[in-house]
Length: 298
Image (cartoon, rainbow, N blue to C red; front, side, top):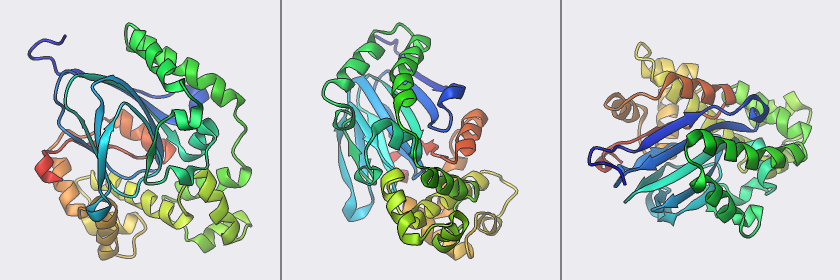
């Protein structure tokens, strides 16, 4: 039981070298009570969450597509809308963020089944897998021991999983390295494959078409740059591959429900993400940082 001023714990961990390319980062937390909702913005990552104690309250989507519920565990695929999540009591959880191709290898599922959706991990990993994993995490005495459990669970599966196809890896890396700055036609020319073939590969290995992934990657790039106070929003748009600032505004509204200026304003009132966390995410092309605004902001 935490003390009256107990604020819980929030622990971030970069994956060990042997996980990189498949896993972006790991995050663990313990809430001491009601937690202010966290808004996770669209990213190129697939997230595995397992928790114990109070369940996580989750609200996904925008407008008429909004849906909500509570979960102790889930796999969330690539999202094209923000996810609002929080705890209404004390709970523990571990999150593992995978690159899309890493998630395809680990879960062995066509990722279009997870796009803009969430599933229980047992649907991919088999009955009882989540309960066994969660029990080991809950029994671990500290975060160092929990990370050892994560390594022991992920390691054998990733070691034995077949590699993603060369085309999936190449196309993913080309789009990631270009921050989404390639059209479907340019990507097809660069990989020497037809656009239809790339659509099929992305459906299974990423979950969304190349054009949608490009939008997410541009959005991530703009989020990263908009944190640099000396850049105007017009500068951010130009450096992020948008045609103009109006184009960036449209994409931001579609993906977050907010304009770039509104997001910059919210972020400016809150604690900035740690440099290590942002650097690790940018390295993997999966910038999925979050805000913890007053719910009125969202």
